[in-house]
Image 1 (cartoon, rainbow over the protein chains, first blue to last red):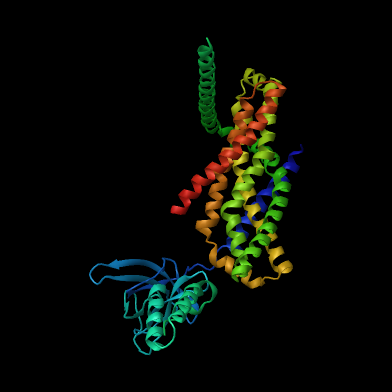
Image 2 (image 1 turned 180 degrees about the horizontal axis):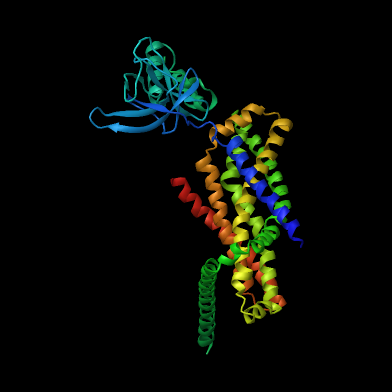
Length: 182
Length: 268
């Protein structure tokens, strides 16, 4: 086999492989959208973080502004302390609300930040005081059942249980439970 | 009298099992020795890189056709089957995630390894087996040319280099095949296809793990092919049996290693 021909084909082969890896990294994976810029850390305490995980997005007005860095347990107050890293370009006031929402059908949870009205902004190491926990399905059903039974005592007992069955399967079928509890 | 006949047939069977077991363990030991010798004598395959280059051509480039065509069809079938089921739950836009994750995490490395073992592995085994049969290996030893350094090591490194490239190509072409079925043919939204995929495929956890898997499979398949060829009985029948054993043992090893690697990676 002619040496130059082999060299050419092997070169093309390796180049194709490198291009495929690059293509996978850019187009398929999340390499380009990962946070590279400078960030500042802020902590927030929640009573229940649900299924929030490290590297979950932190969004404000639907735009990703940071990532969840770590989740720890405070054994004195029995709360979860979430450390989030926010991009330095975005400044949030001291009375920002931090809520845990669920994104879409598959239930990946993220932290939503809603800016308040204060002038002072959060700095590195500050704590967000206004927080709202994740939606726990069992508590919601319990609330719903309680409100339903206290509302319509005259109605038959069949209605609340079918409504509860619908609410239970609602997670797979609609995104209504993704909104903050009213 | 009958009792002793029965007894002797049982002992015969047991001895047969024992013999085959010890043979297998012996072969495993010999294979491991060949592996370490190959690594030890690898200097020449990098100093005289044209040897390795030639082998990359024969193992990697010549496998491109089967890998690319298979990848294309696998991607298309994944998209079709996936859409069929996802549509029932209203999540047909997750088809991109399904195709990408299945290919990048599992199907890319594993199917590529199986095809590689079938195509390149058998070629390596047959080539080395024939070299042994036609006494080329003994002739090399007599000329003070180390056959492991000259014949075995370049093929080993060629296999190790080619496998990740082929697996990545498989994944990419498979995703393209899935895209072609999902977006123009079925009608899933183009933007949703790619954006959901990008949101759910992690570079480190999924793509890099797939590359690591394909490297391990490359080492395993190539080493098995090399050993079977090197150890083949120097007859026509011996070489043909060795070729079959390469495919069977490579395939089983790849699938077993896949389970082991996946269980490690899932924990991380």
